[in-house]
Image 1 (cartoon, rainbow, N blue to C red):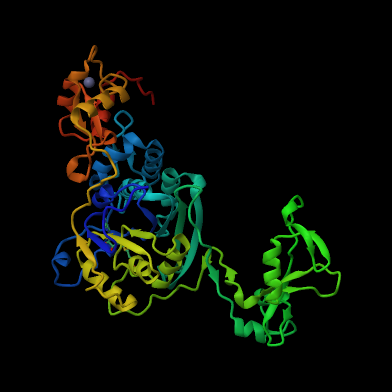
Image 2 (image 1 turned 90 degrees about the vertical axis):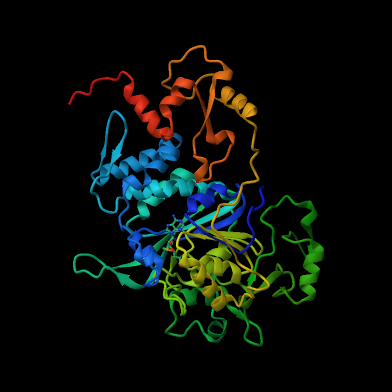
Length: 496
Ligand SMILES: C[S@@+](CC[C@H](N)C(=O)[O-])C[C@H]1O[C@@H](n2cnc3c(N)ncnc32)[C@H](O)[C@@H]1O
Ligand SMILES: [Zn+2]
C-alpha cells in the first residue's frame, strides 16, 4: 500500500482534480466530503476581497466540463457515460446521434454537466482510497439520486453501505406547493468488502435507566425494551443482564469441560472462565443451573445507531460566518465510524475544514483541498476554536501545486513504446485507423491526460498513434478526436 505523498495537516488550495491526480493510490483511509451543488453558494468570499469581485456563474454548464468528459469519461467509463447521457435526455438536452456530441444549451444548472464535473473526481477519490477505505459523500436533494448512480458506477453497487438521512436545523424552500426540505443525505461506500467500519452507538442515559422502573407509566418503547433486557440489579442499583456462556458450536473438544458442576461446550477457555468467576462476573442462580455471565448496562457502548440521524442538527457556534459550514459533531461521528486513531482522512471539498478539524480532534491525520483561497484562513480559525492545536509546533502546510506521485514507475520512452505497442495489439490506438504494416518505431506517443493537468508518464496516461493519426489529432482531446473519427465512418442511414 502506498504512503501518502504529502504531510499530515496539509491544505491544498486549488481545484481538487489537479491535486487528486497527484496523490498516491491507496493512501487514505477515509474520504468525508460535502461537494457543492449550487455553485453560487460555494463562493462565499468576504465582501471586498478579490474573489468577491470576480463574477461566478451559478450554473453548471456543459462547455465548462467538456474536456473532462472527453478525456476521462466518454472513452474509459462506459457506465458513467450512459448515466450522464440519461441525465442529458431527462433534462431535455441533445445528443447528436452520429458524433455523440452533447449539448445542454440553455439548461440552467445542468445536472448532466454537474455529473460530468463530479465523475472524474469520484474516479480519483476511489483510486486514492485504501482497499479498507470508506467514502462519505453528503448530497443535495436535487443531485442525490444522480450521485448515487454515479457512485454505484464507480464503486460498484455491492460496495454501497448506507444512505444516511440527517435532519438539518432550518428547512429550505418554504412553499405551500411542497414540503419544506429539511434533510441532507450522506451516501457511504466502501472501496471493497474489506472496508473498515466502527459501528456508531447512541450512549445510554445510565442515570435515567438505573432510576427507572418497568411499571413507570411514561416510559417510551425503546427504554422499556432496554429495561426488560437489563432486568436485574446489583445492591447499588447497577442494572445487568445474565447472558449465555454456552458455545453454539458443539464440536469444540478443547472448550468442553466441567465448570461449577456443569459440563458444556463453553464460549471461553477454562482460564478465562475462572478469572471472570473470581471477579464476580459469573453467576450460578442455583446449584446445578448453567452458570451465566453478568453483563452490566453501564459497560455497553449504547444503542446501535440506525441510518436516520436527528441529533446532529445545529452547527456549533463559531466566529466564522461561512454559510455551508456543517456540524463538527456530524463529521466527528463519520470519522470515528470510518477510521481508527492515526488513520488519514481526506476532504477534497473542505470548505472551512469541518472534516479536517473533526479528524484532528479525534487523533486522525488529515488532508484537505479547497479551491477558494479564503479556505486557508477559515481552516486556521476552525482549528484554533475546536482543537487547541498548537500550530507553531504542529504546523499546517498550505500548498497550491499538486504532490508528485511516487507510487508509479515513470518509464523511459523506449520502454513506454514497447508497452503501448503490446497493449494496443501492435497497431495504432485509433480504432478507426486503417494504416497497415505499422512498425513499432513508427509509433508516436501522445498524452491522454495532458501533463499540465497532473497527468503522468505512466502507461495508463499515454497512447501510441501512427504519424497520420497523431497529426490529425493534434492538441485535441482524445474523446473528441475519436468522436470525429467515428463520424467519418460509413454508417447506417437513420430512417425517421
Ligand atoms: C458545500 S462546501 C463544503 C462545506 C464544508 N463541509 C464545511 O463545513 O465548510 C463546498 C466547498 O467546495 C469547494 N469547491 C468547489 N469546487 C471545488 C473544486 N473544484 N476543487 C476544490 N474545492 C472546490 C468550495 O470552495 C466550497 O468551499
Ligand atoms: Zn492511425
